[in-house]
Image (tube, rainbow, N blue to C red; front, top):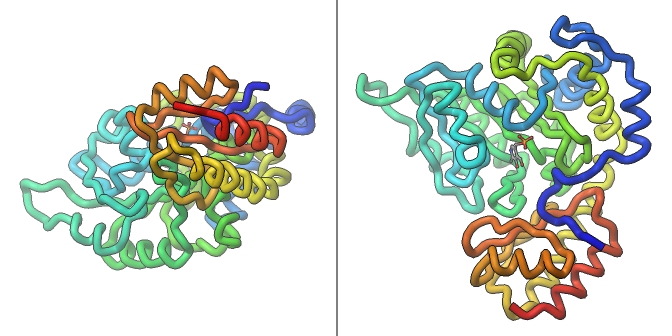
Length: 337
Ligand SMILES: Cc1ncc(COP(=O)(O)O)c(C=O)c1O
């Protein structure tokens, strides 16, 4: 049995999801005529109490569109040094938007108000214009660390006070809300834009929704087009996302429990130096040589991601059963590095 713990993006659509996709009414969404895409955009916006939504092929695109729509060249974005926008989107902020970035060094990727305040630049000709702040919740590279509602609120209030735009990379926002026992509307009014990925823990094959004000989304639609993200009968994909929102949020809690079980087993392994605290579905642990360990585990049927020269990541998701967790723990217990 191959157990794929590399990422929560590896899930395959279930039979019921495929059926929902096949039944979806579709149209040409570049002409704004796909009823299922409209339904997904409206549904996601309503869930978060935001005015409008835009369906995009990926979370990278929703993040990069948000950065582009909120900024102009000579502007600067404040985010954390381990965040996805800075590290894993191929430098799109420079490529698409011509902006610079200033980095906080938060605890497991979580920024604080004083850290942000310190990075705001004065209005001099020789400095870029501090324009926006981007948070990630959960923080992928922080091991799925979670900003509480109060922590997000404090940063949002501060950004409003200092007239900074604020974006949330909510690739795993439903994991964060599940861990907190909160609803999307508990974040109401905090963000100028939110990227919600439905192709991660929620199990859709493709798709992220960018949320924001009506004018912001109108502008974002044009940016999506110039990035090549205008899609035609994309209702087929939107139907999978609607299915995921309706049916799969409930399973995130079990994913989190499975991640905790894996972490507990790893903590007893002699070849593991340290396990980062587990709050959601991501387990990051430190070893001597991550590439070597990852390869050796793959030979035993357990796929993981080397996340740095010494860090390995495991992610639980919809396609990881209790039996797979049990098998993984058995392999870990008998493993010698
Ligand atoms: C925190 C975070 N943001 C954004 C993305 C980008 O999503 P995509 O792979 O759909 O481009 C990812 C992908 O894993 C992510 O972990």
